[in-house]
Picture 1 (spheres, helix red, strand yellow):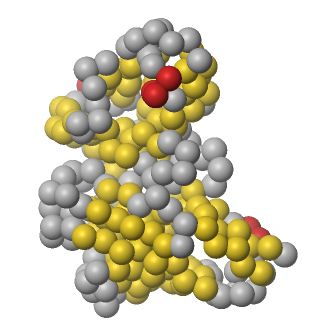
Picture 2 (cartoon, each protein chain N blue to C red; picture 1 turned 60 degrees about the vertical axis):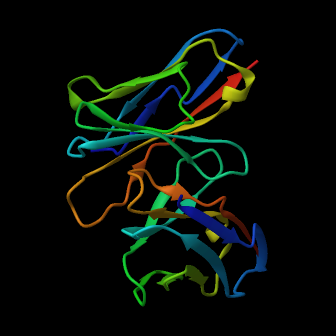
Amino acid sequence: EDQVTQSPEALRLQEGESSSLNCSYTVSGLRGLFWYRQDPGKGPEFLFTLYSAGEEKEKERLKATLTKKESFLHITAPKPEDSATYLCAVYGGGADGLTFGKGTHLIIQP
Amino acid sequence: DTGVSQDPRHKITKRGQNVTFRCDPISEHNRLYWYRQTLGQGPEFLTYFQNEAQLEKSRLLSDRFSAERPKGSFSTLEIQRTEQGDSAMYLCASSLYGGKNYGYTFGSGTRLTVV
């Protein structure tokens, strides 16, 4: 069974204070690892897909990296509008649905 | 195309009543998924369709839940004899299977409260 564990559960940063969110996973035959952003009361918004170890993708202040056991979402010089819950999910060989972690609730204080 | 649409956005129902939700996916997407999300948890997979065929159902989907996707376009999710434990956000997503990017586009969800 595919499993995803995200840490920390919650993170409070000052504006401009860079940090990283972790996503550890176990999956049979990784076909893709996904990062989503979710604002309160809304559906998840797609950020990145990573397919193989060593792959990196960037978008504005966010950079996602992937190893064989975990993924990191690095946030550089965050702004208050980056406050959200960040979800990690895997798409493995065992099922046709994504398996999500519980998310990291990120708060950026001005 | 305005993305994935879900209706209603909010639904309050009494225990024991039946409810039905609707999802309109992105038109060129051939796969449609239903997920359920409770407070503080990530979305949990319920079921999915490829075109009009329902290909997989999670063990979370009890006999009280049924989903349809007639003609491979919009989908409905019905919950019969609702229970308080059914209170959650029900999310619909769609994707284009066969492309390299397996990423889903989610709708804004239907928030169900069973009282």
